[in-house]
Amino acid sequence: MNWEDTPAEAEFREEVRAFIRDRFPSEYVPDPEAEHSLEPEDVFGYNWPVDRVSDDPVRREAARRWAATLAERGWIAPHWPTEYGGAGLSALEEFILQEEMMRAGVPTVNGIGAFLLGPTVLEHGTEQQKSEHLPRIARGETTWAQGFSEPGSGSDLASLRTRAVRDGDDYVVDGQKVWTSLGQYADWLFVLVRTDPDAEKPHRGITFLLVDVTTPGVTVRPIEDIRGDAPFCEIFFEGARVPVANRVGEENRGWYVAMTALSFERAGIGATIKYEQALARLIEYTRSEEGRRYLRDDLGALRHEIAQRYTEIRMLYNLARYTVSRQATGEVPGYEASVNQLFSAELHQRLARTGAKVFGRYGQLWQRDDAPLGATFTHMRMDSVAATFLGGTSEIQRNVIATRGLNLPRA
Image (cartoon, rainbow, N blue to C red; front, side, top):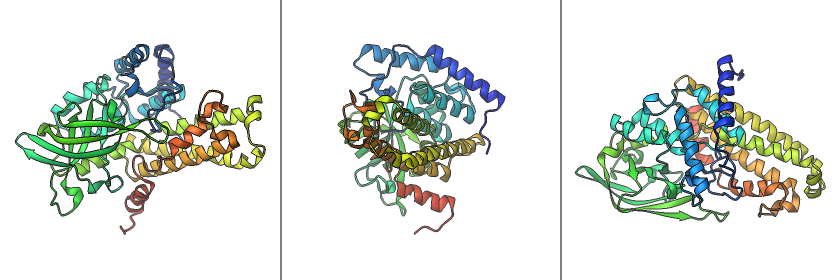
């Protein structure tokens, strides 16, 4: 396949580069100690949902100014229709915008609300839900988190037990969610709840709700991870009343709404650029005078392994381009997005191990100050532990590929 830009796409790419160069706030600088997220779409040193509520007034205002600057162009949610605050860009133009932001090392804005919830509401939501929520996301005024996983219901999501009982114009919600990425920084949640405990098939008794985190009965507690940071949280619902008007799609049909959301979740470009830049820095470092002081003596034995990682990163780029080409024809990513997710997650772990091995015993250093290459691959190795179950485990992805892509029978 030929992924070369058309003349119009090349012109748009130059427009994006100029915009970033001229409009990105100079005071919004990377925080090298930031460990707020494990997501592969993150730009090192930034985490916009956290930065927008930072205790540092300079960082907080710079993050909000960057959001306002992007919102002027509709580039927080570039693929959305203009009436909801988007720019009406094509899927390929949105891909170019995200790619250039990652390459420039500047953060995207409003992550999960813009690229996951928004498209889902556009497809399944009511006009009231679209007009109430989408413009606020597109202006960077509200942030969202995904409340799907539960204790004992992660990969087997259809077994979730959080209950919602209809009471007049409200649902009364009781239960617990866990591993909710950046939920402690979110203004709103989109949550799967069980509304028919007697459904013949578990996934047919699930409903998709939008929940304001300030709702009485909603409690958010951060969870510390292996790195000592808190990129996610657990959420408790105790008699929380959620308006029926906040239901997306039909009652007991929320599973199908959620599958739309998860398809969008698995179709990103950010991981490719992140891995590509990390490997490029590693190779450059191995050739530097400083690098020779800290590298293992038998580095030559790893040359083939480094070359293999480079090849795999180029493969991942092509998978991402193929996925977005499907979106460009109006299709929702299906099993192709699972191929992308699976390959990306396992490559994340292989790249982290390769990079750490290059430094031998120095690959154990955690503090970034004075560590070779700022302990990049030590931290990446810790990040990558969760890669094969974030956004769906490798086993689930393989099942999707087998049944939806290869039409194999279910076990």
